[in-house]
Length: 296
Image (cartoon, rainbow, N blue to C red):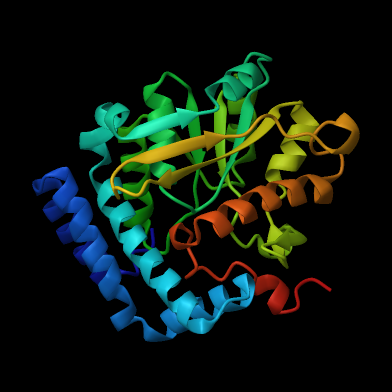
C-alpha cells in the first residue's frame, strides 16, 4: 500500500493528539489558527484559490482573498472536529440542529434507499455522524488518499462517528447493495470527475460532475436529496439543511435526463456556496478537467 506522505502523516498524528487532549472549543480554535497559517507555506496554491474565487464569484481580488483566508481557517476547525469525532459522536445533539428530517423520512419510506448528495461545504462529517446517531443507516463514499494510512484513518474516524465507509465511488456492488437495503448513501458531487463525469454548470462554469447519483436513481428508483451542514456564527454549532426529493421538469423521475438532473444538484450547491463562500473548499481545482480541454 502506498505511504507517500510521511511528513504529513507525522504532522497529522501530532495534531490529532493535541486536538484530542484539549477541551472541544479550544481544539477547534487551535484548528482555526493552524488553518490560517497554511497559506504561508502554500503560497502558490493559496494564490490560485484566491484567483479562482474572484473569477467565479465575480468579485475583487481583495474580497476573494478574505473569503479564502476564512475558508482555510474554517477547514482547520473542520480538521480538529474530525479528529475529535470519536469523542463527540454521542454529543452532537448539543452542537447540531437538523432541518428537513421529514423530507428524508418520506424518501426512505419507499424502501429503495436514498442518495444524499453532499459537498465540501461546512462540516459534512458532522452531518453523517449526526444522522447516524439519530438512527439512520448512513453509508459514506470516499476517495483514496495518496498515503494509504490517511485513507484508513478517514475510514476509522467515519466508523467511529457511526457511518459505514464504502470506499471509492466505483465500488458499485457495495453501493447498489446498500441502496437496495434501504440505506442512506452520502455522495459528494463537488469534485472533478474528470473524463468519467458530465460537463454541466457549477457556479456558472462548466465542470465535470459525477454521474453516479443520476445513474443510480434512474436504475434503482431511489430518491435523491441534497444537504449541507453549515457552521453557525458562534463558530462551534452547525445547521443541517436537507432538501425535498429532487425531480426533473414536469415531475419526471430524477436521472432520466442525466445532464438536467446533475445541473439541478449543482445549482443547489452553487447557491449554498454563494451564501456561505468562506465554508467551501476553494483550494480544490473544481473546473480543472474542463479548463484542460477534456470536454469540448
